[in-house]
Image (cartoon, rainbow, N blue to C red; front, side, top):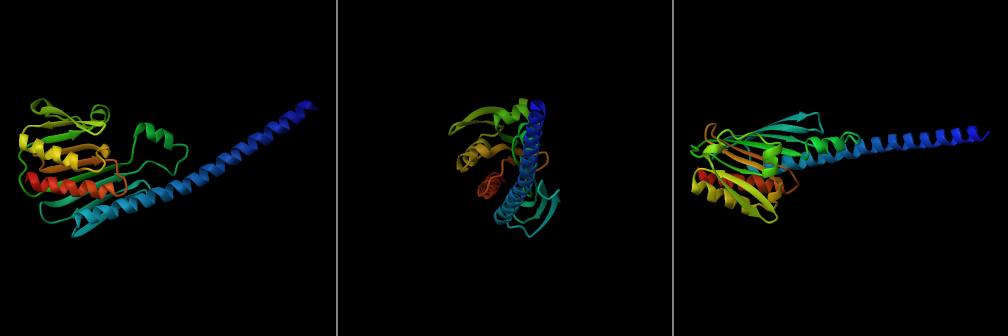
Length: 218
């Protein structure tokens, strides 16, 4: 009799546990999906405000996962390509794993510059550059300098001192420099590449200062 009572209580506890887990997963799915969609909408609006494109095309990546965008512009750059990928907030079970694997939401922005870029330069989050960033092929031909901005340290790679000065000014002008992972000036492809952790308000801030940097170096 005691064994039957124990098994009945055990089964009841298991049932409550699995029911609670199922409810948490469902609530987490809808909350996470809504949160990601709200952030994606805000980021895309901030990009359009900063870039003022003549035309734009969006390709959604699974809805709440992110988007790819092509912006047709005029002035210092002919076009801007962007990819935004979000952490899977809609998946309660996978989200902690994704935090370990990918770490953060990502916004990649590629400016195709009209004017001639002559010198290569980079600003890197050192930890990201060593563990997850793309290898810089020309690193051995560039000067390296450590820059302290608040509590964070960045690595500046450059060949031209004027470009280095402009890059330092760019970094110092950011409201949240800790969101920067990589900024690259690529003369071989005539592009400016930005990788950041997107956050509301700061996407527009980053793009505005990147546009200002492009005007200073071209």
